[in-house]
Length: 146
Image (tube, rainbow, N blue to C red; front, side, top):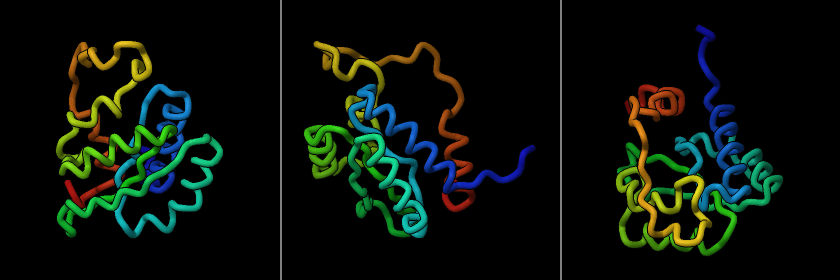
């Protein structure tokens, strides 16, 4: 065992990876890993730098629709304003990607986002494995949410 993983570094690494996917247009938008409000101050300078270097934009999501005691925050990473507007439209209709992920799949998916006719495709996994989010939940949220 290598010991405890630094959450802030983990978040920044994931933001860098997701930002690269958005910048390279493999994803229309990406969500940063969820974080606690008290993490924002430590994250903000480097998150802004990463976005600037990658040529992507950020929208800070406060998630006021989630109960305060369970509230998590994230940045929406986007390249094109119209994609952020689609995301915000879904949010205004009462959907939250943590609860209603399927409503956001067309924005958050990989690979075929710019292909002609992609809106007709139905995403399908060949094989579903264990909860792929387990490491993310363990490292980012620890015992506060689990």
